[in-house]
Image (cartoon, rainbow, N blue to C red):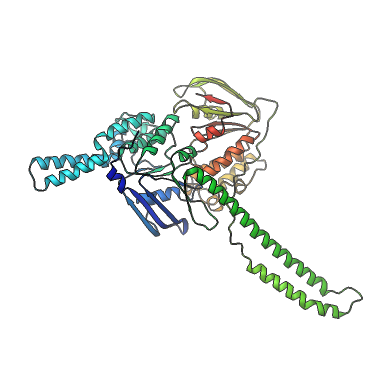
Length: 533
């Protein structure tokens, strides 16, 4: 499917930020960000949770003023962020009209210009020509049809009288995304657009983004989408000099370059720390010699002490100066995810489901049995019942028919698709409370490598969506489950963390069940048994 944008509209589209700095409450969120995107560019913004990816998109939309730097943008902008602009009482049609406001305005202007031309008003011909050019540039007459095509491809509700409050979160976001794909904006700013999409929806989104001749800037955890569409990558993660990096050549080139840079960073930091330790050891040895020689052995005169002491004192001072001058200029690299050791429970089936169904949510009867070390990937389109099945297995939802049995003392834990954490307690307080309930020794929150010190001591209400997702994962792992149920575990997690988590899941002795649409995760777990709903 080719892009419907006019060549003139495409040529003028661009996004540029230069030296952008932005702080919240005195804490830097964006520091020295540069980004240039012209027609045909598809720029991915990546980084760990809380690094400012969504903040940068809000800067690009104009919602957030920057402290320092410049922001330029040309062309109408379509934005898909994580918050819908309408309430539950509004309808699907109202959302379509809102997202097609530019198109509606262009058609209304053309109609008014046509009336003025018919009435013979002065300047009407020029006004009509300008209005017609704008409508043609947007291909405004075909916008509703394009929306209908995308609604169908994304498996979204197309009944425009339906209140948004009657739709699931996923359905509401799919309706909005379909509107944006059909609206004709030359600049698309997309925040996690693959959340809530099944395989067909992912294919449609990929095709439309690759065909888009304007500018695309997207934040996504979907590594397959990034590999398919990104022409450049802006990495907001910390670097050895503290500045964001821009990588050309697409996502695969970025991954390779980032890996090499991380290895250099770790090596340089280790060298500087080792040199500092060597200098500290030399100083300690010199101080010990000074102390030893200050107390001459029996039978020696005081002249021995007097002749050796000045040289030793000078050696100590010299080493103190060397140590003081040696500063570790390379900051320590970020910590990596460390999976806690999950327990085995040999000799019995941990969990068994027999002919399980749930009315209107899981139609097909499911039979499965899980032992320690078992792996299972649950697949299927939206609405097939993947989340419902995991909730039933976890004991959070009663089956309509069939039964679920669990071995005695087996711990089964589920990571839900979205976080429902709230309140004013800090992440560390919630985690410590979980440890206290479980009783047995567990890893400290800082040992997991999921949250930095700043986020560990913030209230849950202040955490970003991604940081709450990481806390959810930490709380699940803190109980050291025998059976780990993960519903769309890549949602809101960085690509680097997903890679580390995937490797850890492959080797844990616990039983693991994953429900996912993530194409890269499906590829990485292709050797696992699959259950298609």
